[in-house]
Structures are given as structure tokens and as C-alpha cells.
Image (cartoon, rainbow, N blue to C red; front, side):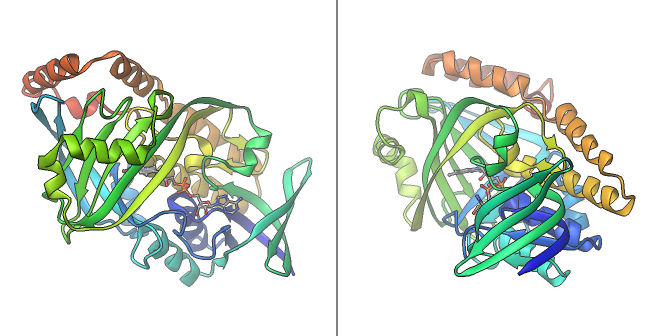
Length: 372
Ligand SMILES: Cc1cc2nc3c(=O)[nH]c(=O)nc-3n(C[C@H](O)[C@H](O)[C@H](O)COP(=O)(O)OP(=O)(O)OC[C@H]3O[C@@H](n4cnc5c(N)ncnc54)[C@H](O)[C@@H]3O)c2cc1C
């Protein structure tokens, strides 16, 4: 089978699903492919929280599904002191995974209604390049061979993107996570973050709940500081914190994952635009990647629509400029570096200081790593 298209989106996570929706909504011939047979199958259902920096307008424009918008996050020290950050910048909760009402599934469904063609369970066999970029991609779907000739490729295939071969990648660290999903772990109006250097080295323990009850609790760790599995850290944390353990009594399943924190030299290579995790846009402070996935996807798609409608591929370079200007990770790296040097007494003190500062300045602004 031979297919010509305007845009080929590789990967149907949050980034790829939004790109497929935007491009198809704006009349581009759009093909979306994923290596899994089912959208969201790479994730065990869970709740991701995602800072609202530039998200509200995109969510409203594309009618994207979210579960909740939370304005409070409560930070706990190892000694039981806490600080509640009330921020004007809220955090959206999005449901992830293979259920039809997850963020990625509901977004892909809309893209397909707009005319986007979806191929699941594919294997990319070959990328053929010419002077303009990738001109042909050969896919295998079972016994079937599909040759796609895209004008633009939007690479949304996650941290181990096959498109990194074109671009220098500078690895910084790995974040490893393990957790459980269930019902009614916490109040849905506040996300909770627990710091403890010994029990969650280089990371934190968190709890998030949606209004209908769907909840996630997990531990996020820096792989270079771990000496046993994330699963053991998670249950060790609960053993030492029985109050939290008691709240996780309606567990339905568990999840685990690993995210690479890395930087790329460029985000546009000829006709390829890298978005989301494939572009290395994870916040190195908390390990959040959903907001950057959606914002980068929206921008990449917007420039793709302009390029196709105006027959001018040079517009794609604007995407690279946008990412360079808006996703500077310097501050987040600094916060992470500082956090890594602190012990539990220091963190306890900082939580006390934040409590005092909260009355004088907007701490939410200080903690942003994106300039939207
Ligand atoms: C346990 C855990 C908890 C997290 N919690 C949060 C959180 O609370 N908040 C937050 O903001 N972020 C969180 N993150 C990070 C967040 O999940 C990612 O940043 C986000 O999923 C990035 O979306 P994406 O679409 O770029 O990539 P992905 O979600 O990785 O999607 C990539 C897609 O590409 C497909 N694919 C991969 N390779 C190929 C290929 N060769 N061909 C075709 N398809 C391919 C995959 O099947 C997948 O569908 C968490 C991550 C983990 C592991």
C-alpha cells in the first residue's frame, strides 16, 4: 500500500494525539501511527498532573479532555511539616492509558472523526531521506507493507525516538517511577508531594485524586541515586509512613516507568519536528512532561499547517526558535541541583521558609521553568 500525506505523526501519546487532532482539524491529510495495537497501551491507567502554562487556551480550542484543575499543592517534609502552595497557575489532571476516556484515546478518536488515518501495531522498517528530509517511511503491519510519503514528519515517539539519529542528544539523568492507581486516595482539590532524601532519593512521593475518585500515588526517583528497585522504594516508603499507606486502600492496579532527561541541539531537522518526550521536553525538577508535550505539539502542528497551506517549508524553523525561547530548562536544572544537595533538615527548613514567603510573593511564578 502506498500513501501520500501532508503530515505523518509518529506516536500516539499526548503529544502525537494532539498533533493528529490539530492537523486533521485544519484540513491536512494526516496519518498517525503507533507501534502498539491500542492507543495508550504503553501506560497503565493513571492520573498525570500537568502545570497550566499555556494549556487552558489549547484545551479549550481543541476541546481536550481533562479531569480536574487544581490550584493547591501541598509539600511535605520528612518531619511532617508542610507548605501549601496556592497558585494562580493551576494543575490539570489528565487520565492516561488505554481506556477510551483517557486523554490520548479521546484525542485520537476526535482526530479520526476529522479524517486522520490511524495505523496501530506498526513497525518502522526503513526511513528514506532526500535533500528535503524524510521522503518515505516503510512500515510493517503484520504481513502488510505500507509505504508513506509525508511532506512533514512530526516525531512524537517518546524518549527513545528513532529520529534522534539525526540530532545530537545530551543525556542528563534518568527518572524512574513506580506507583499504584485506585480510588479516593486524597482530596481532589490538592496534589500532595512528600520529600524524603533517604526514602525517595533525588525525587519525591506524590498523591493525586480526580473528583470522580480516580487516584494515583507514586514514587519518582533519580536512577543514579538508587540501590534497589523503584517497587522496593515505593513499598519501603509506605512501610515507614503508615498514615499514607492507610489512604491507599482501594488500589486497582500498579504502574512503573522510566523517563530520560536529556537535551537536543535542535528540534527541527529538515522536514522533521520533534515534540514532547521525543524532543526531551521533560521538566528536570519534577519530571513532568504532559504540558510540554501538548504545547510543543500544538506549536509544531500550527507551523506545519502554515507550511503546507503556504507551500513554504522554511516556516518549520520557527518551531525550533519557539522551543529554544520558551522551554529553557536552566532554572529547573538549578532547582534540581540544589535539591540534590539538601538533606531532610534543610528541606524541612525550606518548607518553613516557603510558608513565610508565600504571604509576600507568588511562589508559583518562581517554580515555573517555562516562559509562556
Ligand atoms: C510513571 C510515570 C509518571 C509520570 N507522571 C507524570 C505526571 O504526573 N505529570 C506529567 O506531566 N508527566 C508525567 N510523566 C511524564 C509523561 O508521562 C510524559 O512526559 C508524556 O507521556 C510525554 O508524552 P509523549 O506523547 O511525548 O510521549 P509518550 O507518552 O512516551 O508517547 C509516545 C508514543 O509513541 C509510541 N511509539 C514509541 N516508539 C514508536 C515507534 N518506533 N513507532 C511508532 N510509535 C512509537 C508509543 O507507543 C507511545 O504511544 C510521567 C512518566 C512516568 C513514566
